[in-house]
Amino acid sequence: MAQIRVLPDRVANQIAAGEVIERPVAVVKELLENSLDAAATRVEIEFSNGGRSLVRIEDNGSGMRPDEALLAIERHATSKVREAEDLLNITTFGFRGEALPSIASVSRFQLKTRTPLSQSGTELLINGGKLIHVRDCGMPHGTRVEVAHLFNAVPARRKFLKADNTEAAHIIHLAKVYAIAHPQTGFSLIENGRMVFDSPACPSLEERVREIFGPVVVDGLMAVDEKDGDYRLRGLISRPGKGRSSRHDMITIVNKRPVTSSTLNQALIESYHSFLPRGRYPQAFLFLELDPKAVDVNVHPSKREVRFREAARLRGFVIRSLLQGIRSAAVPEVAGAGAGAGAVLPVAGEAGNAAPQPPFSAPKEGGRGRVEPDSPGYRREARSPTKAGATPDPDWNVKWRFLGHAQKGLAIFDAASGIILFDRRAAHQRILFEQLEKQYRESNVPAQQLLIPVPFELDALGSAALLDHLDFLNANGFTIAEFGRNFFRLEATPVWTSPEEGEALINDLVGLMKAGTISKNKPLEAFNQLARLACQRSVRLDDSVSEKEVIELANRLLRCKNPLLSPLGKPTYIELGRNELDRRFFRNSAPSGNLW
Ligand code: ADP
Ligand code: MG
Image 1 (cartoon, rainbow, N blue to C red):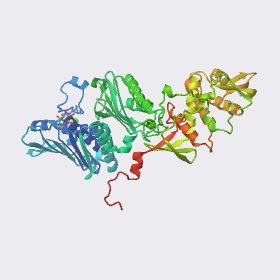
Image 2 (image 1 turned 180 degrees about the vertical axis):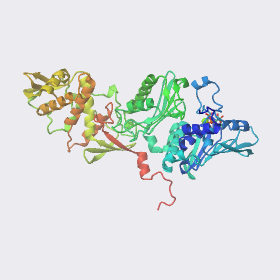
Image 3 (image 1 turned 180 degrees about the horizontal axis):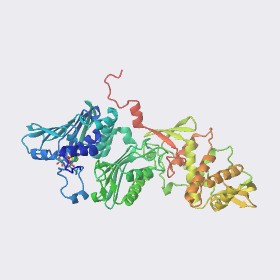
């Protein structure tokens, strides 16, 4: 019969190492966290060959006395948690007391440390978990840990490591994330003897992001800072319309600890839903502060994934806070920028400026296929708004300076912040969409009565679907009468479509109803579908549009609630920012002295 016995420490450490130290980046993380826990204001990280041959971390933190240093390499020795109760209230990175002995059990581990009060430092050398020597050494106060030949003696683990480049990429990313989380600590990172970044203590998060990610990234960001009870959320997040192609640029920090949290990531993605084109993700450097008791960091030994005690409340708070910032920024920054000739860009919602919305002049460029509401043969219902408000207010000149037309329906503007490439079609669609939305909300959808109603027939399923949705269609400018089994009569259409297209449109709509995409149980979603269809079908571009019309179009777009995207999720304009231009033309590089 097998005997039960307590594992020798060395074996226990190697087993724990399998959990805590999966790969080189985990070594960097543990050592870095120890340095931050020791209140270092400067940390230097060096590694070689993806961390396999060397990881060295040096800090100017509290250091350890000789007895403390010896204790530190004992299993479950920690200075950070004394009672089980402390586990509910963790404010330091470390608390398990496993990292140092685990790392030392699978590498050649050298620790040198000195407290500000000690005369000399202490040096410990451990190889594969075996203590080789302890002796005095000279060094400045702080701690320096050097981990060499990681996993050399553990072939099974070595085999699972990826290429050096991959391991290196993980380490670099980790170092950047921690540097972001601690702007007031100086960080430098050296790979294979080469400096990756060297960022002194920074006065602000923005400075740190600029140092590490560059000015172009900073340009695409805006600040948020919101509070609710014991929650506080602050940081830098993508300006609306300025997302990234990868979902990995969301850095979230909870009580100074970089974490991954599906609650936070989902809240971020959701908040940007209608403010970024499809397939784009927000970039974020987001700091959440809350009572340490409300977050469980003890889910996994690597402590990266956290859980929140009141996830639903937190999620609501995060989304509200983000939306607050995103919405206020959705009015483009051109608003106050530049020294325009007295031209003031209207800010959405400024009642004083808001002339009545002109009815459907969005498709004004239209022409082919679309019938002007006023054209002979079609009577417009009296409740539809009049055209009186369509004259542009002369003050409403975009401070963008119109430069010309290009490519397919693009207009180009010059602005203080850069060059604007403006998609006229997408702009028209956005304007039309918001008009429809307003009319729908106010139950004031203008319709055009057909002099000669259009009869049409549907199959049994289609007919059932249509009957089910008659109220919905009637509320959106259609009048449809049933006059026999599966036979209908189209008597009025919304003004955004032409009567000739009415029947085709009904067929499209019935298709969406059959598919469940339009459902009377979800009236808002159904409206959105209909309005998108309207935008797709009714906006056509005219090549001979005048400068004045384009400027008016831009002004109207910028008055929209969400001017950055078309209702179909495409950008309405793209900005080539000044920094981006400077970067591409190397305009900021130091003058070489001799310009010729
Ligand atoms: P934990 O961080 O979970 O406490 P570790 O094994 O990482 O466990 O470290 C053990 C102890 O060693 C820490 O509690 C701390 O007291 C001490 N220590 C480790 N690294 C440092 C450092 N860089 N500076 C000062 N003390 C340190
Ligand atoms: Mg630790």
